[in-house]
Image (cartoon, rainbow, N blue to C red):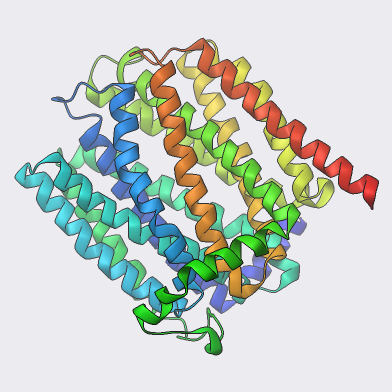
Length: 423
């Protein structure tokens, strides 16, 4: 198979393998850390979680560090990205350890959220840097397959990290703090793995580097405006990014719904609900894996924009059919489908953005991409909080999300048709 052959070629590239190792360890740690936070906030026996509480937690954790995103983009286009991976992961080791200490000491909620916020803020630098650095370790002809393997492998690593956290929490330890410390250990491994790459390898170019923080931040507004203008001039990238942002909104709203179903509708105990949520996330992760396998061939046949149309259209039909029963088995099938379609569209979007923008702008554009992801996810949680009853069963929400998916598919299809007509 062509996909298998291309994967073998990529994995022979030493620098690609090393960058991939940093991604796997870093995102695996993210999965562990995020599940530890979820179980502490949502599945603690003393907490009576509501959709509004979930939305509030997401807003506290995601919205403030969306402000960090634009600064992260500018700095990633000014700082050596290898150093960002090294020092960023070391900082997360420290901050995650602080989070664990706050859990054990039963500190006030605001202090706990502030610590968690700092960890996820650093995450913006690392994830945006990984995407911006990828074209530095593969050639343009293999960028699509690299985008299929690398980000999807990272998502799978996060899913496996989450599964490991679930297992440790359910079997080996009742302490969420212990799970957070496991994440800190993986962050340390990611920092050490980054040292295997040359300090100049991942860019940016020497004449763009500004090592002093004040110097780098001084031109932030000007550089961000230039980045937005650059993106606006690349219409295919802007359209793909907009479509992916809406699909992220859909996925976030459905995640809150599934969380509430697992917590109250399908289980009688916190541990049973936690196990069901872990199963749903694992099934969705399997969809990510399948997307990585089939997207290169699908994007080659339909084009990257066409594959986004197919993914959004399939999600619209199948989410409606499988979501309305509000039963575990159809919902697990829907989790697989949405994992596949969301990740498939993301791979296509990453490829369009990477191939359309210049290297000097990639860091800030991927950071804006990240900010849009966070805002849409928090917005989805807020909408879900308004529409969901306590047990998570909401026909209007399922129909609304299906309509959004359909709108994405129709809008992208019309855009592609207009491009062909003017060609």
